[in-house]
Image (tube, helix red, strand yellow):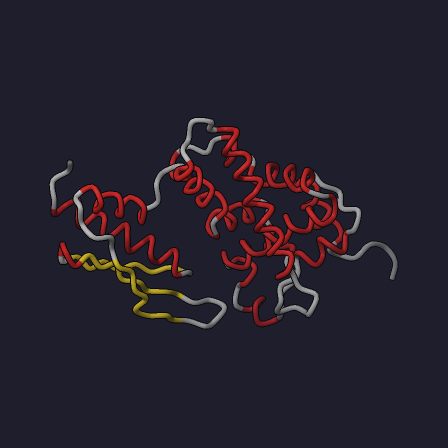
Length: 235
């Protein structure tokens, strides 16, 4: 058989979308390989990609919003690098169509699972960094995020629900809420967490669910925030 491997063109298309030509294409191949597929998978690349992504986004926010205080910068960064955002970026790049997954993951829809997409996106950023260094990774991240970075207003820069709830309570000199995982359902690779947000001083118990404990806590906090705002006058 002659010619390039069947996945060469999609990978080149992905690399083009990132604005990076790999000197070592094997790095991209490994970044796109889930652990269910083989031993040379992308988990270590996720580690370095996560660090590079956080640094690039922090650098961008620092320059873009010179008057923004540290706490708000941290919240904005969290909104730009969390699982939901990474999965959104990966979906825009159609990253799922390039992934190498084990048969079980393929059958269960792993190519569209947000956790797998988010991890692979980090791994790809890590692969670019390993291939050509920080400047190349910065360019790739900016290319992948596109308009998300150019127009970051709205929910990305808004305070998250847990922060808003805590500030609401502190302004009234009430104790911070308590969060507890009350249920975990599903297989290990596709779990759903159920969390309760408890505010004993106001007799409030709100519940949320999500694909991670953090996401479930945010949903529970949002529900609790609605409860306390309806129960008490604004200040």
